[in-house]
Image (cartoon, rainbow, N blue to C red; front, side, top):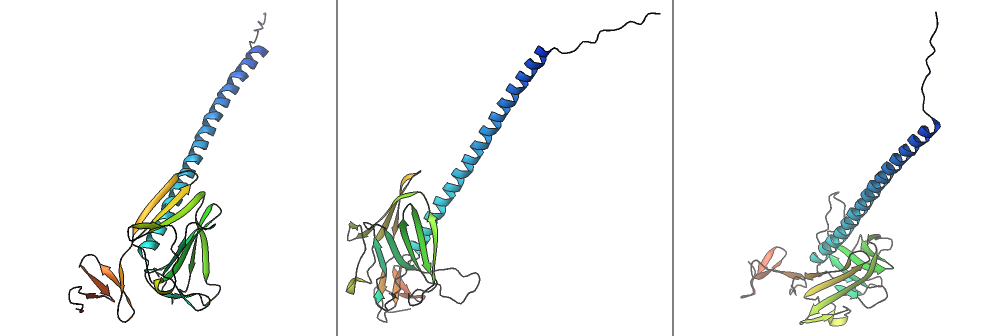
Length: 235
């Protein structure tokens, strides 16, 4: 009885090389697609994070200016400082003032007032604030970068229908405040952005306390009491 030997067929070397070449092309294409998706995702995440940084910076600036209060302050020498101080044409432009409504969820023993300063350093917008309004104490300053990739930071101040670049006053004008503040920020990626903030009007009462105009009542409020502009009395 004869045993039939069957020839076993296999892949030739050429077929194996062709298969490996096709597999390599498929894998290379898949890796390129994966890398493209990953790079696009990372770029989108960076853009979202950057947009969030810009929005938070302008929101913080808007909140600080909106809650600006005419609170007198003493500098490190004990002298009375202006309510607002700012320079746009200096090497490091800045704006410095005192704001109210400083939230205190931790119930710390501190004032609701906060002295703040925005300063343009290199390509960063830096926010300084102090735990105490008066600068008699050292070591109370806290600083953080609020905005990066900044090319320029300028301010303009409206007074008597005229825009001024700086707000440097002394003597009898140290209690003066502008009618509006315009902030122009030039970013490397977003270009020029500007915001205009109208300022509330204050009158200094006879007792020396600031009175803020109440736009809804046509008068002013002082410690929660309205002053009628017609009669000058209080209700």
